[in-house]
Length: 82
Image 1: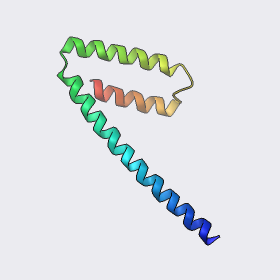
Image 2: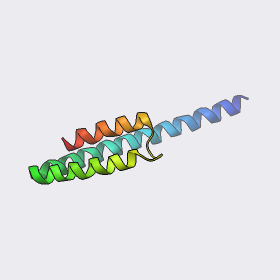
Image 3: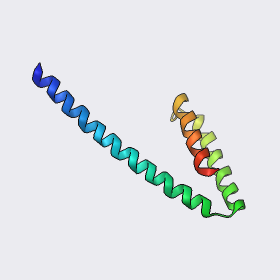
């Protein structure tokens, strides 16, 4: 039983480390995309925002995004685009 608990703790620690790495990668990508979007002219930025919002609306109708994740994703998209 002790070995099982120890093994589970090691697995949990490994997954937490992987999760932290992914969070850092996502944050870096968000910074890059935000910088790229802000380099666009106002008109082009609006066109990109409209296209992303349209794609988001289409994806939101399907089973790919659940309720809570949908709100969080929408918040992050707005943060990047506006």
